[in-house]
Length: 213
Image: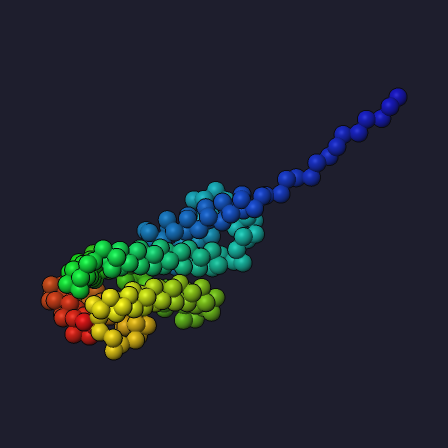
């Protein structure tokens, strides 16, 4: 009688592509929850329930639950960076003169500074505050923040190259300044008596012309 042997196969390991899909699913689930919940109220149990991913898989792909949340926060921040840079780059490219550029910039500025955009300002202020005591988050955020600063500085430099902006300012300094007063609009968002949005917009337009053109 001959002996027959059945080959015993080892369990399949998740492929790299499958692992990437799991990571993306977990991050997207956290992002979805951030749309309606405060970060302090989002728990690992809630993310696992919504995503259908096992706890073991979560900790296989992320150092800890905070690691996952940080990835989601930075990805959300990155998406805002990409949107802002794309709009401003298109503004420069589509303009044929200084006045056209300033007119387009006025429209973009009004939209970014609008009361309806306060949620984005709150988010940026919150993630910056969280990064103060979290070195890992700070490092990740700093990469995206530098990308935004560099992109805006490049747009200022292009405006100077075209002769539409003054030559006596540093594009990088101007980039940080623009971001500072844009984020600073959150001060009015939390004030009891709000300033007139039209008056704010008119003031910003005057400041841009006086400082940069």
